[in-house]
Image (cartoon, rainbow, N blue to C red; front, side):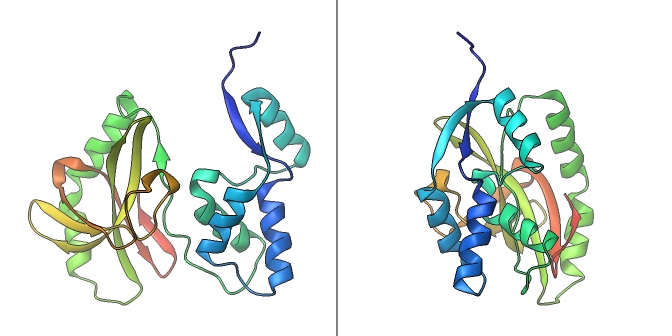
Length: 197
């Protein structure tokens, strides 16, 4: 019996379901609608090699369920659907002990002074500074992007602007005091254009 990891696969593809339901609605699906559609869609567990083969036969990769809203908005942009909606930022669940990841985290922390300068030099309404930090969960580490609302020389006050299903105990707007040492990455969303990261 194969011991290959099983991953969830939407049948039909989640992106196809979202396209169909948005067309029926006649306007963009809301965040809540997208998450509800994902949570109620049909899923089968499939070995990764078979899932990869299915994606190849389809001619496209389906939406990542952990980043459903983000991936859906990027798909909408690729299909030139209007109006364009802010996708927010992707979340990542991974092994933080990986050497290349540790180097990327260190590089991000070394450039925080540059990030702070960018924050203090821009007051545009469409300017959203973001930091990535780690949430420790029972089944692994989740790296989550937070929107910076305040900064000092050694830390940031930042808030959740979207809540992944894995963070069910939190709400949009919850704030966190994040020390520089806990920052894994930073970026700026300026009217939908991403800088840094």
